[in-house]
Image (cartoon, rainbow, N blue to C red):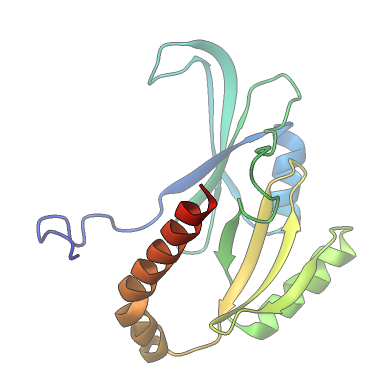
Length: 178
C-alpha cells in the first residue's frame, strides 16, 4: 500500500509530545537540569482552548536540539498519569535520539550520577538504547542509530511484507484460540 501523493511529505516531523506531570517544577528540574532540555515556553490557562472545559493548568515545553518539544501538563492536583492496566510498563514510552554510542554511555553515567535508575545499554541491532523513568513514571528511551541509512532502507523495503506475515500469524493464533 502506498501513501497517496497528496499526503506524501505533508507531516514534516514532531512538533511536540505532551504528557501529564505531577509537579511542573519537579518535571522542569528533571528535563532541564538533568537531561539538558531548556524550558522555553509555558502556557497558563483556566480553560482548555479546544473544549472550553474548566481545568486550571500549566503547559510546559522543553526544546530538543532539532527544534521539537516534549511538553507536560500540570493540572494542579499533584496527580501523575496512571499506567495502563492492560499494557506492560515497557511498552508505552518515548525514544529520544542522541548522536553516538559514546554520548549514550555518557548520558547513562550522568543519569546514574543524578540518582536515576537506568536499564541498558541494550543492543537492538539497528540502535542502542538505555531506558529510565522520569519523576512522573513516564518511561524514556535514549537511543542512537548503529547502522547505515542503506541498512535502514533495506529494512523499509521489507516492512510491509513482515507486517502482513505478523497479521496473518496473529489472526491464525486468535482463530485457533476461539
